[in-house]
Image 1: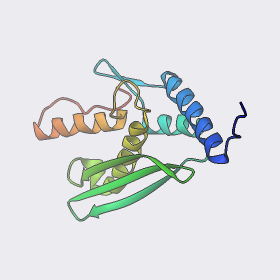
Image 2: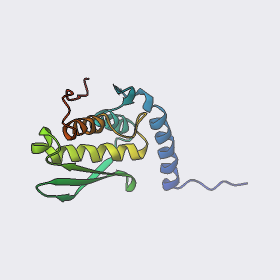
Image 3: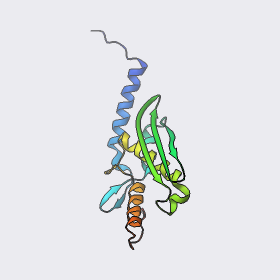
Image 4: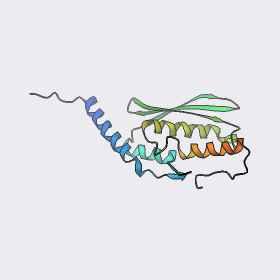
Length: 154
């Protein structure tokens, strides 16, 4: 029985599958922070981990909407010419003090984090540490709690 030689496309798919498996199985090495008893990894750490296994990865970011009240961003992960994950995020400019001047940046980071999580790098929780801290702080603002604001260091 004569075996058909693999095409370049078939070889690259096998290489991708092996690298993805190794990338995801070693995700437990990504540093995390403990927030309310659960482990969360930062977007930066998950991004760094992904690039160790896929240095050719690239991200396409698109601002879907922005005005004086909110920002919506979509981020796509490409490896070679194939899209492997998409993440969306929305930020409200009046949600907190940081968003008054940096809603676009926060939205961009959140969309990137959700895109990487959609690829499979989400730690024990899908949300990133930054997203959870932001949500907790927004809850504190909405309830006008006297509880101190949460930070990743907390």
